[in-house]
Length: 324
Ligand SMILES: Cc1cc2nc3c(=O)[nH]c(=O)nc-3n(C[C@H](O)[C@H](O)[C@H](O)COP(=O)(O)OP(=O)(O)OC[C@H]3O[C@@H](n4cnc5c(N)ncnc54)[C@H](O)[C@@H]3O)c2cc1C
Image (tube, rainbow, N blue to C red; front, side, top):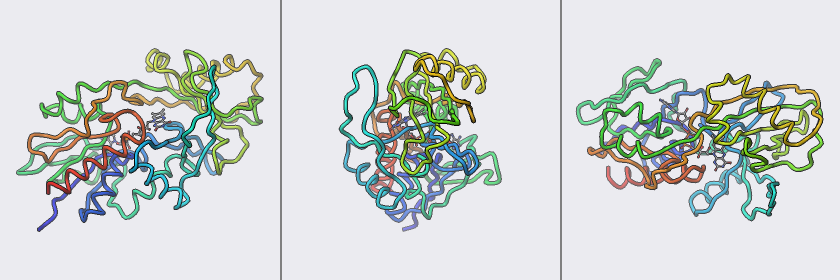
């Protein structure tokens, strides 16, 4: 029997775990991604050949069998490794679960999933409309309009809502999901700053997380690179500021929080994660259209961590291979 033609929109962890499992089941999905690389919020900003920052997800850990299996595979392939196990906060407790990171950047964590895939970058999807028994997907680039039998959408729920406003069954579920933003600063100090601990969880009400990126495995020690993530409250209040303002203000808060004299700043940049975390997830594996050929998922279906993204992708792939 002829296999259906499948599009997967989004090359984050959920889109790629779905694509890989579909390939193993004999399908040949086309993955359409708006940015110029894979990983989505598992993201790495590289500054020339000198240094890099994981400005989105900091590390991942697994609670279930499937993601654990994948992380072991990624470690065997040499693209993932273990980071420090301790956080520092008022009640610092040892974390029992290993923190797994992508070697040379979090975005590398997903590379084993993308091997041999039909991937299209710089291809933002702008509309999805019913067409015969399938769907017509329109992208803002040379792909133009293409028809597929099945379309899987794995992007944050508020962005999916914009694409699917005419799909009433899907929209009613999408409307239940809420996201919070996270504003971030990437800071490289010329010399090592006088803080011994490498990770801080919620050091005050304005910050959610600070981490020495250069303490991750396979990173150079200098410059001393730090990631600062603002709390949801601070992020919401400052979402309309420019990225430069965000970076400068977070650097000031960082300095005040740790009461230290900072060395010269070699690099400073801000980033806005408008849709960072699902603060109200859907709590079901995925959303299905009435025709069962338009399927929407992402971390926000099950929770707000990388493992949730991985698992929703696998569930969608199982549904497709069991049904078609
Ligand atoms: C600041 C921050 C810190 C985090 N920290 C952690 C952590 O420490 N541990 C953890 O487990 N998780 C963490 N997370 C959450 C984790 O990053 C996510 O759960 C996971 O990466 C989500 O994967 P996804 O594939 O569902 O979505 P995404 O990664 O968002 O992937 C969606 C993809 O779709 C693409 N896309 C969007 N719209 C379109 C369109 N119209 N057309 C084509 N492509 C499109 C995007 O470019 C993106 O590549 C963090 C997230 C953020 C933002």
